[in-house]
Amino acid sequence: MSDTHSELSVSVWRGAREGHYQTYTVPQRESQTVLDVVTFVQRHLDPTLSYRFACRVGVCGSCAMTVNGRPRWTCRTHVSKVAGDGRLEVGPLENLPVIKDLTTDMEAFFEKWQQAKGTFVPTRTRHDAIAQIRPDSPKRSAADAGIECINCGVCYAGCDTVRWNSDYFGPAALTRAWTLVNDERDGGNAARLQAISAWGGCHACHSHQTCQELCPQALNPTASIAGLKRRTAAAYLKGEITA
Amino acid sequence: MNVRLYIWQRATAAVMAPLVLVHIAVIFYATHQGMTAEDILSRTHGSIAWAAYYGLFVAAAAIHASIGLRNILAEWLPLMERRAGRYAVGFGIFLFALGLRAVAAVVLS
Image (tube, rainbow over all chains, first blue to last red):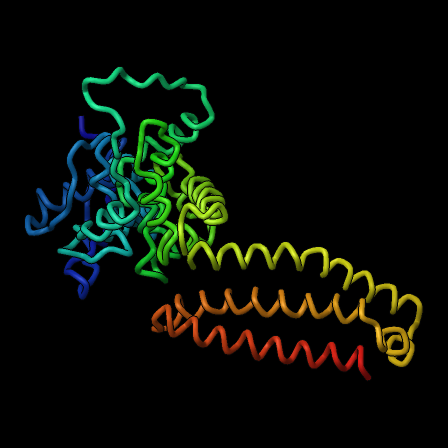
């Protein structure tokens, strides 16, 4: 039995920085995701279409695209939720250079993750005992609040401050920094607080809360960034970091 | 914005918050009492307290606004951060001078 009910009119970005939306007609099905639609276009209508995906179940975060003007995971976005009028517009993530069609260059996104010192700095060796961290301690709770970020880039693509200030690290990198700032096993906080206190760091955030609104993991990067603002201000007043 | 400017902007906002409330209360008081400009100036003339109050207000406003303007210039215009900072300092000095002139007019006239 066919589960095709009607047809979808799907506009898909073709090109790189310069390009255009090309419209395809795709059969609409039950429980169809936007990723299913993009895959249908590539498999049946235009094999030259470039896009990125891996897990298809909301774990890897690689299939994020702009769907009807809003950045989303396409694998977890049902067509029925976003295309009530049978129309769908799928473009690449904003605030990132487009390589081709729906594929963006994530290099700047991950470079900023590095600039925000998002790498764990161990304080023990394999010969030391495992650190005993109480899961209900305030610091661990704060770290846990941001640990589920999978770097899909949705918050970065939707952030107005990134759009205005290309040096701004963005919500994902700063959420990672906040997680490590609260990780009692980490020893890199002096350099980390210094890095995120400079131009482009946490103080560039306008607290628009778009990241919180868009995060598919329901994280709150705005709250993490607010925590970093407080922590860096205290560190500056104590003379632990310089401006 | 860096952490130093962030602290200055938040600190000046904290200074201005009670000053704004008193300022609004004074406006309500003066209008409800039906005071003329002459009445007000007769009370403020030679007052060190009003000079200090509005002098602090002007200084906080000039610093706070110029840091905000610096951000706007750097984000909305193709200006480098340092150049935006120079324009903002110029604006802050201009605002401070205008404010002091107003304070002088109220206290010294």
